[in-house]
Image 1 (tube, rainbow, N blue to C red):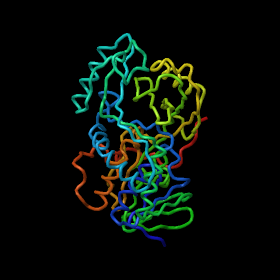
Image 2: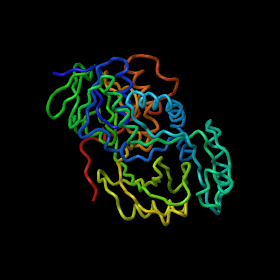
Image 3: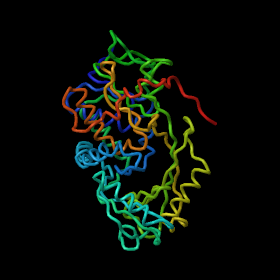
Length: 383
């Protein structure tokens, strides 16, 4: 039986980042994915790096998001240096747009919230902002100077290549169908082909995490994930270049270095049905044009969808479980790209028995689901 120090189940950016981190400690790391790594939520993401909450009720992730954003320059520098691949990382700030009729009250309330959370935020007018010269002119905005963007597919390729260079063994087409247990401890995983031993197992399989556990298994409670579909459009724009992220409560625009603009996104409870829909694309286009009217004449280059990993409270399942040897790093929902560096650092600390980062992660503990009825077994598709 093959044996590793750590087996990571799930080869998206979260899993690859943990492999990257642990392999640097000379641990024997195996990364298993049921298909080609990185082709699910990580491949579909837009690449905004924003710790700002979507509302006052969604602030638990802010300290974790800020810590991860702070780690991004070092994270991408290490990946780019080792792999020789660009990640498209750019610290270009963001403009959060507020449209008539209630521009000032909503903007001022949001600024107060951001500042209370330690997020740099300044009121600006889009007509006065060079970064917002392509935006609708009758709107107000918040300038968020610390935010950044990255090209998720390029980032994933660089991180995975670095993990491999550091000694991690990457295995595609390896579907994990269960865990190995001995005297109450997790000692490895069971694939369709064989048993693989490990001192530690990390579940990082996104929306597919629950499917790893047997139906009715008490361990399914650690990762009650579900798929949340998000659709995205890529535009080729011939007008004024978009220099920074534009977003509103309805949608967002993310500029790429090659001049394309990525617009998104929907949030749909559609099971595992990963496809684009006419209605979803219509809503994205409407929101995009509302932010940047000149996109009405832009060419649509591509559209795609991905399945984000949601949980009952849409916070990650992140940390040690009460099954020794088993760690969760899943359910990052809309924030997987942002949270990859900090998740990898936390996983390293937990596995090596080091003091973790000075961040309170109790809100993300997998054990918070212990009292809930497990959502186990393979989910069914909705038509």
